[in-house]
Length: 154
Image (tube, rainbow, N blue to C red):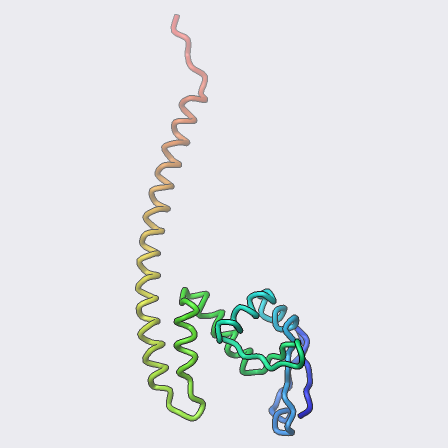
């Protein structure tokens, strides 16, 4: 099998000819980290947790197109507040030859629950911001009163 390596920022092949000729397009760990703005430690952590499965050439980690797609999903899941366990559960249900109904239902269920949590957090944040703004207004008024020159009574 012939391997080609992608560097961060390099254009990916437009078609699948590379794969159909028995070649696989690999990206090294450093380039993968740059491409997705994550650390090497993050990529190794995700591998340890079973979220990514790069190929190995000695001690070199080589990431495939599948790994890139999985990392995009991991990062999206983390961005919207899913735990890594939730992300793994959803991704592990993927079957390239199936209907993925179970995966889609689980994803929908977890997404609905997460959206409800985020909405509650938004309400709490809005309340905290309102209370903080009121406090700041009060403190500004107190500062203005105390900083103004006092009139001396004669």
